[in-house]
Amino acid sequence: MTDPAHNKLGWMLDNAMQMPETMHAILLSADGLLMAHSSSISRDDAERHAAAMSGLQALARGTAEFCGQTAAGWQQTISEFPGGYVFLVAAGTGAYLAVSASERVDMEAVSFRLQELVQRLGKELTSPPRQDAGSPV
Image (cartoon, rainbow, N blue to C red; front, side, top):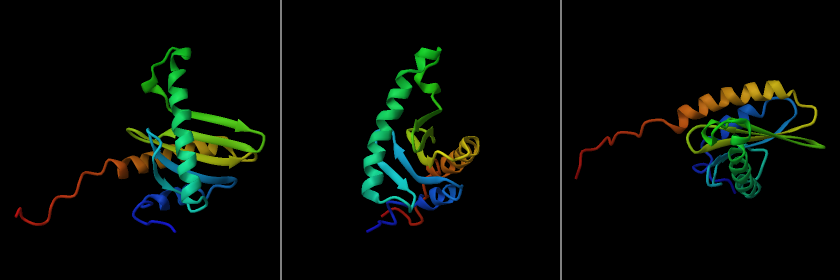
């Protein structure tokens, strides 16, 4: 059963999945907790993949020095498999976006779309807290 409160940003991920050859999308925290997922993946699978993606981003950040950078400069990792790709991008402070796609995907178009989505998600993730409408008791 899907918990709508848990997946309040899922609609944004579903929107990203409108691209041809994309399969699943998850939004995760740096410590591997699932923040949102596309409707194409179950919550249990999304949670499992979120934990794995957290490890992947940590490894990628750890290799930044290899190209003369710092871990803070990491932006994206693309993993290639015989059947497709996994795109993992920074999506704001302590948040990451992962998208899977088939081997026929237009990689440049997906990367561009993910950057657009990250900008939209960033606004949602950093929205100012609501002001209390009532007076203090």
